[in-house]
Length: 411
Image (cartoon, rainbow, N blue to C red):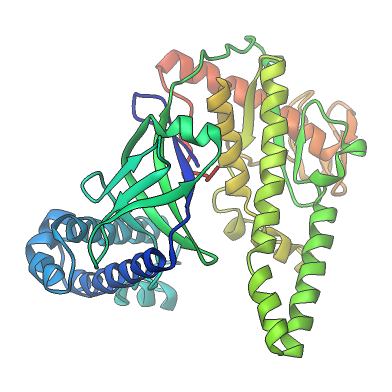
């Protein structure tokens, strides 16, 4: 996992390390998650009734109750902090309008409902609760039945090497019947690429539904089929049809199949986003250019689409693709500019003429100002590259850095 946040010490990466516990250790780890999340839900109910939801303020209210429910001192503190972070995230989402306007029933429901935690939700552990023996491939971890020592883990060699620079907390995660530790590590910033002082120094990236990503270097008539929204839609429809068929059957074997496939579509989308982002960053790094990409935050609320396109829009994570491009670019030293996408699809990159009539169809662009004709996505990519160059020059003159990635992405 990689975060683009700049803490002054490089790029933060989060590496997923798989645990290989014995049956007894497995039961202890699962019981610990259940206990910690039951306490977290209790703390969240108390926090719902208080005005001050900072971790320290809540700790004074519920610390003793957490200890009485079987948590040791430090796990109790981390659990309270987890609840405080959850409420801070909820308040931030409310302020940004992600749960509707304040007068909506959805907004009122979110505000009035205490946050609840799944029994197997992730639990943070700091160095007082968890220690690593990297050479022995084992960890020592606190549980509700006592500290477990010599719990084995398995990882790739590159993950083992990165663990030496681990910092801060690690999260115990239960996913698909397996336990993982998500460890935060630091990677030094590479030497940055300095783009040419012109729009040719930027690789524009246009994101869309028919074509997931089109760059200024691409020929839109010969795109890689993996980047095609049509191929993605076909795969999604196939998965949807199979899921419905298994649900209709309703047998035990069908339910097992459904359980095994439940994350298949999200894994497919993540894999495609990784492939696309890797290719784009490699393209920019090879040609020593920066990357300009659209800021599609809130696109679901802004755009109006045909019914056939709505499910594709809502099922594909464009924010994840953008974040993957940003963090891969930072690891490669490639500067990134996230630009406002408004009017990029109807503005001619050649002369700057902007009109809705410039785009008579999804694929075709015909400028009524200068007569330029080409693919609409290709034109938008060039326009985004121009905006990226303009924003970069402005940022350089004011000393601003490239925008941070909003969410980390697991590796």
